[in-house]
Image (cartoon, rainbow over all chains, first blue to last red; front, side, top):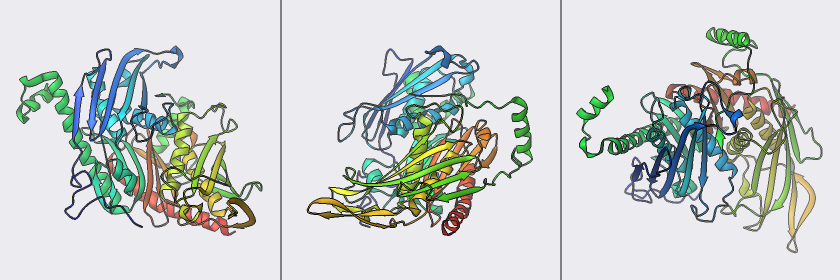
Length: 252
Length: 273
């Protein structure tokens, strides 16, 4: 099989990264005035905006649950987000991704604290570059935190995959299309729980373990970025981000 | 929009208690061990109008898969490959909780996960199914009807698809004066591997394989792992609003290889007889 060269002789990938390197991530919190919580993430060339509305009343009312909150999630790609125009109607892919994003976030949200209410999460992909579900989960989780919703942990997501027979972190669009495996993972870093796991592509037993462990490492790196973004938003520059101070906040 | 819902099946309190108590002793309501699969029955070629078909019974879950072969345009970006499309529909016959109408997100997930298992393993060598590069290719539809739903539809449907595909006979088309002609002859499809999926669920801290509908109504999380004939992983989907630890995933991944191999042998054996 003629595989496209995705890693050159010096170990650099098509976008100049090493195999253990994430794309550049820029996470901004509180970008929408009307939403209860919001976040904008630039994950490589991905540009994704997430709005969280709620807890609010459920319509239609019969959808409400007496003992807990209903979490609703929509993942949607803008028609201009891809190389060829995407039909704005929800595709089967988007319906599945909406479901897996909701299921990735749900274990982190304390649904029991908001009985009879709904929390809505809208993930809009403005520009897609591979790994948009992971970037969406990462942004949605901080948007939930920004909305002040009780959570057990943040949800950090990152993919790993196989390109040119090597396991690489954070697969981009070209690597997803030309590479041979892609494994998106979402993780609760403090509770050590995996809430999203998908794979397409072929991995042998040792590659599978390596890929899974590498993506968890990626999730931990993403988590640090989430934490930093939340600290900057809520504590500003008053609080230098050294270890001493972060420890204090944890204890409080 | 995807929303969190309760399972439509609500187990009676005592039944649920009984199940949870049994699980602590490593047993299940139907007497199986935690890692024991239900009986698998496969009837091949049950629908004569189809180019290939299979009826799969996994316990009380029952699926019919039918293969239909046509010619058409290749997918964009895959000009050198034939097209393979797997669909699934849960019929209203399957359970009192299924309503006719457009597929809901669970059914869409089911069809896409089964399709992913077949596609990513490159089970059918689609490059051999091209008539005119970039213009006309074989299009293979595998349509699945779930006629009885008693849990683990992912595996039952996946076994139905691989059984129907491996046993099907493709009509041979040729190009004559720029027109597609059916030669009337048939041949087996170019099969490279047998991808087998294994589904496990988590209830409390217990992992159980091949869940029934009753067990699924109490599950926190589900995972489906597909392996090919070489024991390599080709597709994974975690589902439901719960989570797994790394160790639990590794455990299911190991078991999926072993049990997958058993199912593969069983399907081969049934196909011969």
